[in-house]
Length: 102
Ligand SMILES: [Mg+2]
Image 1 (tube, rainbow, N blue to C red):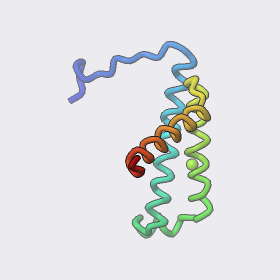
Image 2 (cartoon, rainbow, N blue to C red):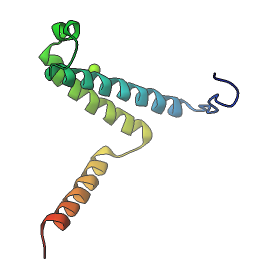
Image 3 (cartoon, rainbow, N blue to C red):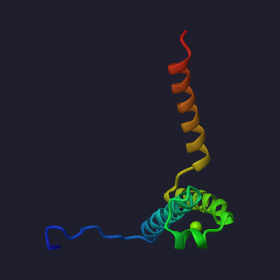
């Protein structure tokens, strides 16, 4: 199946690029763990997983996702506080435009 035509052609050169890729993969892992816990809270997991589920872990997974996101932003040179502030302003502006007629 996989051959020369489908082989990935990316190459990481710097330590920074490797760090960004590693943290991106870690973020995906943490999002997956949070998704699993959401399924457990909703009792949509199979019985064996529900038996192992601890609600405290659910809270911690939210923290893991946020912490890993902050770490990724730092590695990528993104000012996360500014990014969130700017995005919230944009959402508020859109909300006001859609809900308040002048
Ligand atoms: Mg986790």
